[in-house]
Image (cartoon, rainbow, N blue to C red; front, side):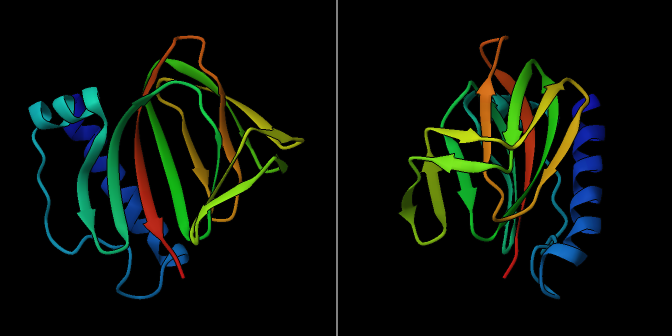
Length: 151
């Protein structure tokens, strides 16, 4: 039941934030999506999409620390459901490499703003903002990622 409430909250936030992040008609749900808690839980174990519409993807993710990410057009809303982590946003990417036309990765960030995230926290990361899951003391974190594509 908690997963459904969280998913409902996710979808509501995505719709509200879409108006500022995406052009009219992009990044909003194309249809009604109902994903039952068993499917959400199974997806959370391996990580992956639970909703995939044009301009809007909702992921159920589990991960540890990793490389810096930078997306040209992807705006994130991360909703923490388990674990804790330090995420760094903004700053200057160190040893940045373009992986494709839409994304870059790097080994670390100099400067930036450090945020300590734990269960129940929400963070928004606009497109063109470097972000780095720098430290995950709980080994992994579980979170929903609402990804809204902008122009």
